[in-house]
Image (cartoon, rainbow, N blue to C red):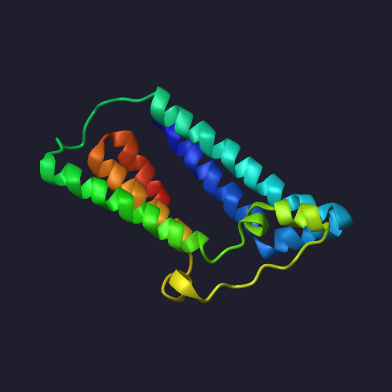
Length: 158
C-alpha cells in the first residue's frame, strides 16, 4: 500500500512540475529547437509512470474490501465508469490529438504555445480529462471497493 501511495504522489508531483509554465519555459530556453520533443517526451514519461502504477494495482492486488458491493452499487459504479469515459471523449473532441500527443510538433518542427480551451465541455469544466478520470476511478472503486482502490481514488481526487 505504501508503494502505491508513493508512486501516485511521485506521479502527480512530476506531472504538475513538468507541466508548469516556468519549467517549460526554462526547458525551452535550455533545449532551443529541440523543445519540439518536450510534449511527446512528457506524454511518454507519464504513460510509463502510469503503467507502473497500474502494474502495482493489478499485480499486487488485494481483495480486502472496504465494504461488500451489492448489485445497485455495482450498477452505479458501471454507470459512473461510462460517464467518466464519455466526459473524456467529449474533452478530446476539443483537442487536436496530434498536438496533444506532441506528434504534430515533431512533424512541423515547431512548437505552438498551448491555448486555453473554452468551448465544448471546457466551458463548464477547467480540465475535463481530470474530471473524467476522477469519475471513472470512483466508478471503478464502487465496482471493486478495495483499500488500494480507495487510496488511489483519494490521491487522484486530492
